[in-house]
Length: 104
Image 1 (cartoon, rainbow, N blue to C red):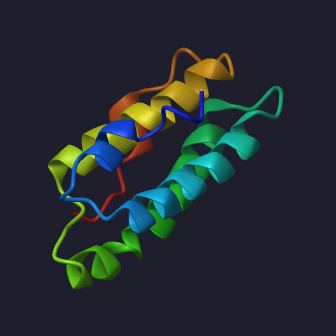
Image 2 (image 1 turned 90 degrees about the vertical axis):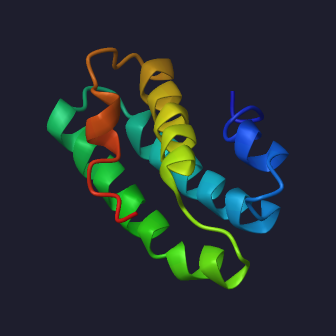
């Protein structure tokens, strides 16, 4: 599954691969937290919000490389995080809530 995460961002020259790889690493860490058994929805959202805080902090790095974390990036990131939670068996999670605290 991780091979295909954020593939559209890697394929789009607008997003620097080095930064997309870092975003992917944050999602991978999120996956490790979510893969624990018997998490509540609030715990999953808490982990997701922490992941988004880390990704939000990358905004200046994207801008320094003439890119940005835009709505399209938000869609790709939300889809990747949703794949992670569904792969772990959490099917009632709201995709928009996973990235609710994004700052772009």
